[in-house]
Amino acid sequence: NAGVTQTPKFRVLKTGQSMTLLCAQDMNHEYMYWYRQDPGMGLRLIHYSVGEGTTAKGEVPDGYNVSRLKKQNFLLGLESAAPSQTSVYFCASSYSAGGRETQYFGPGTRLLVL
Amino acid sequence: AQSVTQPDIHITVSEGASLELRCNYSYGATPYLFWYVQSPGQGLQLLLKYFSGDTLVQGIKGFEAEFKRSQSSFNLRKPSVHWSDAAEYFCAVGAQVPDSWGKLQFGAGTQVVVTP
Image (cartoon, rainbow over all chains, first blue to last red; front, side, top):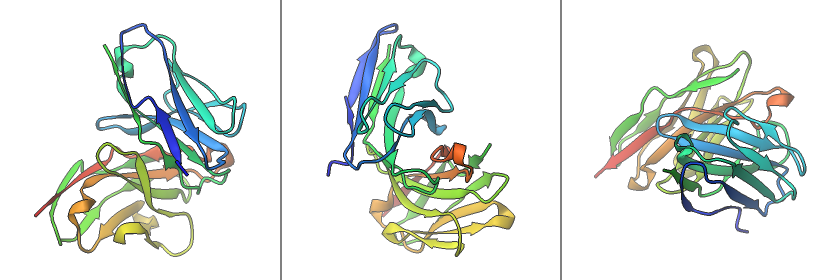
């Protein structure tokens, strides 16, 4: 099993450009999450999904959109990138509900917006 | 809403010495508590978690943590540190209410450096 994979690993964008980050998991997990990690701030939840076809806002959703058309994939989109979105993005997944479930993380995508 | 504080941004410890990382949380009820570790250039990996029962929790890689309700703390410990324990450690808290399931609040992290 590959676990949670993220594509791409690294990307440089110019301000105003758009891009999509792809997260895939092969563990048949219901829940998927997108976080951003910034120095001194830990991880902050951007959006999450509790199942195929559903998405919800997290702590810092502005400037991002997500889609979960297939259970195994969770896409994060930046429609018009801004320097403030320079960050490391992590995707995670967990089995069903309950709050006590372990989240499994991907290796991250490092994004630089110039 | 829940929140997490990791008071120590950076800790340096000698190999073979003991390690304790502090975590304080704020939440109105008993939370779910987690410790994750992030090695350089990697994603996060769960070390251990607490949600009920015995307040001393054993995890992987020889780590343990103790939940102290009176102090709102969930400190992580390891008796003897190995060089491979150099990493960043994150404490996280989750709420036990259904509409908050899975929505973890992470601390800012503690960077651990291990010296020979």
